Amino acid sequence: MKIKKIFTGLFISLSIFGISSQKTFAQKNRVNATTETNTSNALASSPLGNYSNEKAGQYIALEAEKRQAINNDLQATVVELLELFHDAKQSHWNIRGPLYFSLHEALDSYASLYLKYSDIFAERQLQIGNPADGRPDIIAQTANLPKFPAGFLSDKQVLEIMTERIFTIAKRVRQRIENTGKAGDEVSSNKFQDLSYELDKQVWQFRAHMQ
Ligand SMILES: [Fe+2]
Image (cartoon, rainbow, N blue to C red; front, side, top):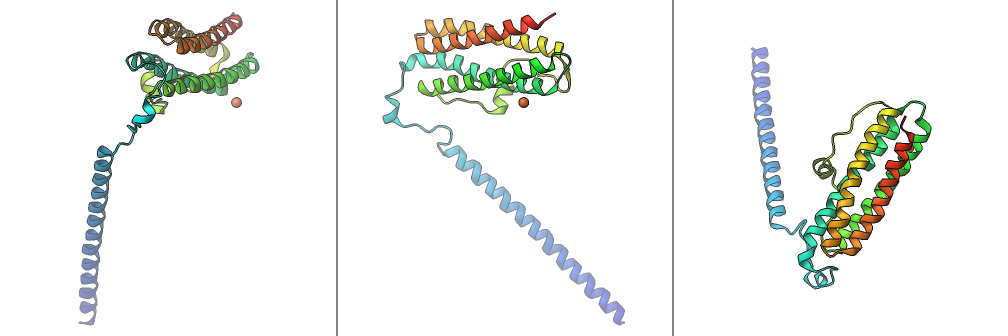
């Protein structure tokens, strides 16, 4: 009889505990769902990502109607340079072969140059009143280059892959010198000329290594 009572008590306790646990879990879920809804509602109705100051807006360089086309070229260049920065770092880590030392050093200095120029072009976007976008997912989606291979690469493979990529970007940049000049932004055009010189120099240096 005593044993039966103990079991009955235990069963009731477990049931209560189970029910109360389920309630707690459901309540927690409801709280989380409510919080998420509140957060997304707040984001949708907030000016996050779209902040502007009318008074400051009058001091933006370059006439409003010229800005969009120039900004497209600047933004494209920012993501391409950030992609090249990652490619140069990736290959300088994983390169193997007789040219390891020279290419390891060269790629690291190229990586620094890509980072420096990505900053110059991003800040030019800001100068003409546009936000810059250097987020990783935007780089991957818009740099418009084949995915860089993972793993070890021979020095010959690195030379071919990187020369092809730098050469591709150099061609696009050369076109942008003309675009931005015609669109009435000589300052951006000059910066594209500076970058063009550096990219052509890198392509030449890698060409000189080829056998
Ligand atoms: Fe390094």
